[in-house]
Image (cartoon, rainbow, N blue to C red; front, top):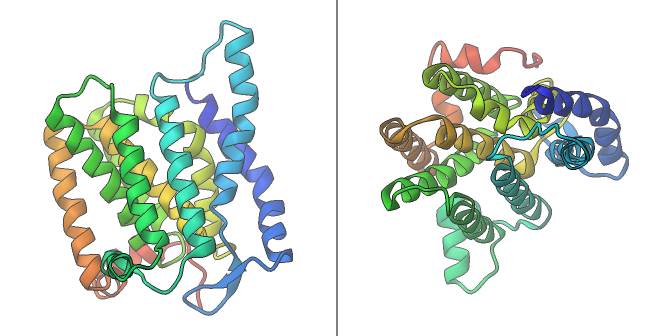
Length: 275
């Protein structure tokens, strides 16, 4: 029964995705990908749509019967993921020229409005709020907040090729679940995870571009996997890795590194249509 939100979320996304992507295309909401193909954008909104549709019967079932399919962390998870998805949507629809932390910082210092700066501050506020009152020590609390923020941002840097962010989420989620030997984080994220995997498959097959709406949400799922599934020591190790990748991605190209690294390059290209 714990798996039901994940299963229903995936089924809802399977049903909703075709019409949602067709709607985006018909409304002219398209963007060229790295190969110059015009694809529906931002497809990440369909992940949120599927999760909210599934929330209707699950919430009613909990209130009107004795069946509760939600994990204790589900409310915090939903707040964080809905929040970062909204911030990503704002960035998708309103973003200007400055990109990256340096570009957004320079825009703010110059007196301009930056959707990227809003996204960074909003993500910080969400992370601070959803982890508050969790019984963590001050150090554990700040560690979790940093991990959530940086992981959410990192998936923006990864989402430059079809399916890359979804593959990273699957690998990370499997590693955390196996390493922690605990399925509860998986069930706590199921309401959004099922739909994210379905849209991630559409992204991999170059049927949609998820946009920051989707990459923020996938990054939020990854960060929550780490925070909910790992203890303090493992979180510190994860934070070091995420921070190193973030700094590298700010100054160098992660895509270029992937392309010149055997094994990683092949894994990255699996399932992606050939040119």
